[in-house]
Length: 221
Image: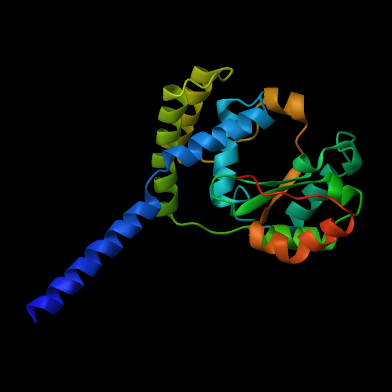
């Protein structure tokens, strides 16, 4: 009986360690992710890193309460002259698997505007990718963001307007405001127009269409 109880106790400790490990901050993964982001988007600010990692964790910025409004916003955005033909962009900028979570992809709206991806399919995939999260998820995120900031400073990553952005984010998080737009600097350089789609949904319903048009999608390491 004592042996059985000891075995159960060991299993419980092991499970707790596994759970703790899953929730612990992976320093190297985030360091590598930041290096990847800054190599691809060297004009990124701390605000843009925040947005990237928040999307990597949670997907679309918030749960979509009104699908009609979301559809109207998408339709209006697709009229923007900033959205050029997908042929004018490298494949690696058309579809991006967000690190380090690898749960969501950013899909450039040029693929919708050029009708590579049907509008109805794309919007349905977008709606299905929006999820609800409880307060514990957000508290974990706030703690992880503190670790990301420590990492940025320790590794001496040079970011424009760093202190200003750091204070702005800290102030917002204290008020439970978790969503940010890209910085004006980033928007000016990269003209971002995309939506976030769940990676599993993407692989099942959208990736086959992408392959038909010889658009390459390569997962980053």
